[in-house]
Image 1: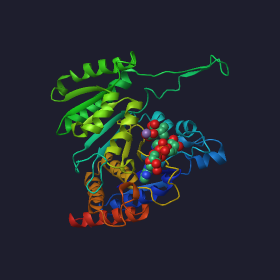
Image 2: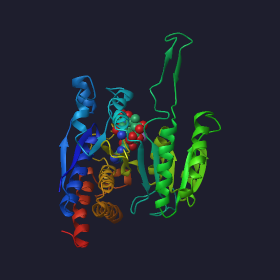
Image 3: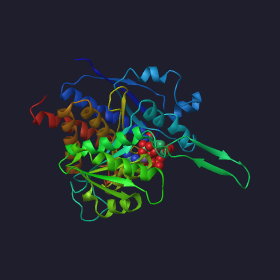
Image 4: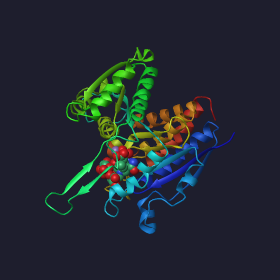
Length: 368
Ligand code: NAD
Ligand code: IPM
Ligand code: MN
């Protein structure tokens, strides 16, 4: 079979520490389920690259990356040396836009063995997916500064919502919900305060949900403020949560925090039409506070690899990897889970345990 071509971009900080384990696990899955994956490593799209080249990306980045089916991305950011908006807009946000990865899928699941900070929650109680608009909204570069340096100094930044952009993300969320057992969408809004763009978001949702194909999908909407409260107080109620770029960003750190740690959360930045590569990454960043200590949780990176397999139709392998993650977390062996999950393990002990478990799961299912 023609190999699936994957561009590997570790980035900075713990991105470079969790990436090797993501790759071990993808290689394990490829070997156990007979898949052909081809990896090409790139050092750009990192602050380390920026500090020597003065740009985050080389001039020919698009020609290089466009030959790949997918980008497997670690995390970017060295806040003490490169301003965060430079590193983000120079790499990740640029990929999302130029590759029209307008769907950002961010599942949140309370896993066996991972303690939730919310009392009385058990594995499976929290199981929803944030569908984040990923190419427009509050993340715009339209705006500017006037009267700089004076008392009247003023900054303005526009929020952009287009009919195409809003409709395609809402439709994606409705279609996703339709395929899930609970068939429920929660739409994040703030149409009481943000009086032009957010009422527009709600208006488009009302139009789309009325389509006959979504008759069986239940739609709720909450203003983002109370939605964050419900996510903590009653996370069970969520199935598919759709939000604008900024709201989706916030909810996709809050949701994983409710499931114990943001260290396990994965993210798929998808161009559904397949015209451009899609990008798979953990939700977390480069975590400078723990970088270099060898204790970063590799599960977000590994689970992102699992989403990559799922996206390209390798369902059996994807299921195997998810089961392997669940088994290892659920067993909670001493010295395996990383400190963010109240364990005493390291990136290495956890990553290796999941890699071994991928082979074991495949063997038990009659593979390998
Ligand atoms: P962060 O996600 O890097 O870290 C937030 C907190 O969570 C830190 O205390 C960190 O130690 C902890 N944490 C994160 N991932 C973890 C893991 N795998 N295991 C254990 N603990 C983990 O967010 P931040 O501190 O806001 O940002 C740090 C840098 O990363 C900034 O430069 C920011 O711009 C960048 N960032 C990049 C991405 C990305 O590349 N996708 C995402 C978020 C932040
Ligand atoms: C994320 C990150 C990025 C975002 C940053 C690094 C710009 O927080 O992927 O969630 O806000 O989208
Ligand atoms: Mn974020």
